[in-house]
Length: 233
Image (tube, rainbow, N blue to C red; front, side):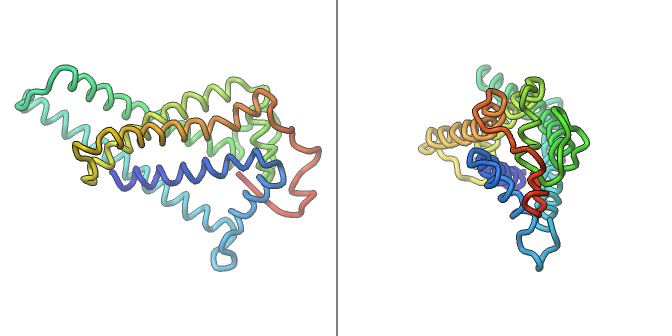
């Protein structure tokens, strides 16, 4: 569970880095998206790297969810059989229960959000804001949030869940891997908090800038037609 969670964390950090290229302009962002689709060609087919990453992501999510369910089931069974053979302080127990509930429901929110995100920006089956074009990543992102506060709200809620999940996940993963000891606990808390805040701010920066008109609108016409390349989000 710790390893799958860390892989997911590195993936979203890389994704956040790519999203921030939106602020460099339409050509840079679409060029970056096109580069991802053609990376390692001809060793890999077109979009090969992206599909490998997607497959790994699905495998990690399934494994992560399965491990989480197994842990939840085991804890419930132990709780029912032992009735807390080892007593915890009430405050510690309440905090643990709150964290577990947050992780569980946050995971459900993230799963639903991932489905929505793929439908919106990968398969283009859900296209709020206008007509999306395969390969025109800058325009698709702009249409997704420009004059679309309800889409922004979906992302705000989902990314808040991601931040909370990441905060607790970093802590739990390091604990599982034996990296947490008494003297380093304050530092680990700071690291977990910084990672969570960085993810939330990085992912919400572009939707916020689009919604409030802080970035340029896409140029008229299709970027793919003008540049003769197929990019994508």
